[in-house]
Length: 109
Image (cartoon, rainbow, N blue to C red):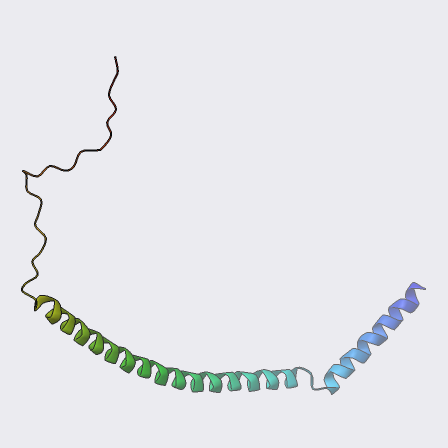
């Protein structure tokens, strides 16, 4: 019984090897890998070009935004500093005492 199982396994192995060679074997596998590699590289190159364009666009938008923000801050500064009637709050003088707490506990005795 063991011999029959062994012979069937060898026949199955031979049939699978023949089928592998007939379908193209390692040669077809290499061609497929090379094709996929070249496709991947071309996609990467195209994506890199699109990415560069996006970065350039974002850079120009960022510069424009920086300029607008600087202009707005300049206008705000002129508006705030342009009012002479407003004076900064006075600092606390040594004569002024901070208010004392409202409730104090005393010892009863």
